[in-house]
Each structure stands twice: as C-alpha cells, then as structure tokens.
Image (cartoon, rainbow, N blue to C red):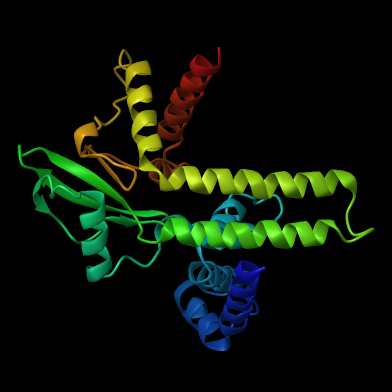
Length: 271
C-alpha cells in the first residue's frame, strides 16, 4: 500500500504539471516548428512524453509500448512517443561516476572513456570507450537505483491492479485475466532489461547462429568486462534500422532488402 501511496501522487502531479491538454506555449512552439498539421495530437504526444519521463521506469515502458500501437492511437501521438526510446535525460556527472564504480569494482578496464553519452534510454545509457588494448568499444550502463524504482512501481501497479480486479461488474473475467497477465509480463520484461548479462548472452547466441551469414555482423562481447550493470561490446559503425524506415519511400529497395533479411533470419530461428 505504501508503494501505491507514493506512486499515485507522483503520477497525478506530473499529469497536472504537464497537462494532457496542450499548453498554449507548447502548442505555439510546435506550430512554429512544424505547422498546423495534426497540431493537437503532436502537442498531446509531447505532453505524454514529459509525463512518462518524470513518472518512473514503468510509466516510460508503457509509453514505449504505446508508441508501437498506431492501431489504437493517432499516428502523430505514436511518433512523438518514440522519443521515449532515445530522448531521455542523461545521468549527471556524480551519478555516472557512481555507476562506473559499481559496474567496475576492480577498476575501469578502459584507456579512454567518453563521459558524453551517444544514446540515452529509460533503462541505460551508452558511451564510447577504448580498452587498454586499444580496441574501440561501446559501453552500456544501467541507470543507478533503477532496480529499486522498478520494484516500487511494479509493486504499486500489482496492488492497484488487484484492487481494480476486485470491483464487481467492472471488467469481464477475460479482461481481468488479461490485465493481470499484462502487469506480470511487463514486470518480468523490465526486470530482465536491468540485468545486462542477459543481453550479453543474447549477443553471444546471435553471433554463433549468424556466424556463417556474410551479410550480418554481430558485435563481439567482452565478457571479462561485463556485469549485471555494464555491457562492453565491439563498436560497429553503421546505420540504425530506423534510418531505413525513415527513407523507405525514397529508397524502397534498401528497406525491402533489410526486411527480407530480417524475415529470413526469423524463419531460420523458428524452423
């Protein structure tokens, strides 16, 4: 009950602070930058992003899920919510120093480490570094205190969900089961993301499976440098899949090749 008592007021405060209805100043800024096209939905999407970023990892993860659901939300809102994947506030200097000390208790294995993140997400942020051997690597670091925040938010969500499900006539039996399963599955997914050893193992597995494919290269994982809070892997230079999506209309052949490769690999894994 204490968790719910802490989380609910924070959500209410952030919703009131940022507002689900677009603030005049925010809407005016969007109008100047992007014109009138779908202005209300864009401003609402921006407000939802700010609410999620200020309300904890669970709310952020829900926003990320909704970003993929253009079947239930306007496309303009979904596009705005995609910012929750990459446009997160970075750790401050002291937080970063603490995170590095916890992730590498026996000392940093790097000759150089760039404190400026190249990507920041809701769970972790990514930096460039150079091993003492001179190898250029990418370092992914879990945000400090995240496990505690996730446990608090999930405990609150499970409690509130349980209270809702006890109300007679509010939901059907099928809906109650689906809601309960959704909260449980989301909790399992969030807790798994916090342990970067799982991601390291997945990269190793993909590397072994795709070793014979000349069109795919999986970054090498430096397991001796990895932990639950840090993932160190080979730096590969290339384009993200989002770049192909962005230019799908102007370069459909490239997008088609990427999609074809992805489907082939999925079918190989399944069959």
